[in-house]
Length: 117
View 1 (cartoon, rainbow, N blue to C red):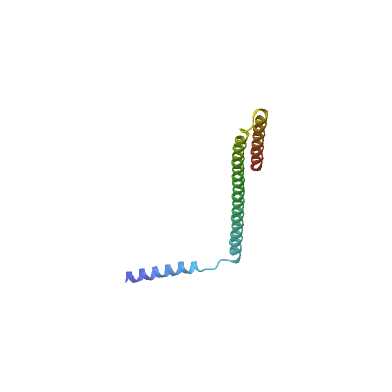
View 2: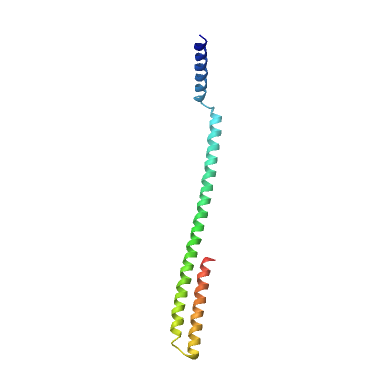
């Protein structure tokens, strides 16, 4: 008999807690919850947009740096070729040729670095 009473009490308690789960909130509580959820959603979206913008900015900077690195490598390769060609000249002509090649290299490096700054 006590076992039956205890089962009935457990069933009544369970039914009461289940009924509380299905209880509708008041319109005021619902509006507060909706407003809070909207505000949190707006905050989350704003933070995600800010993070995405920073990621894009970082990527653009890396792309510019890579382009600069390639331009410098091309300039250095062209400089080596020019210096070898200068070896076929003599005296002042050779000095002038090498100075021109060095000047072209320095200008190309400065131009490449200006893109990333």
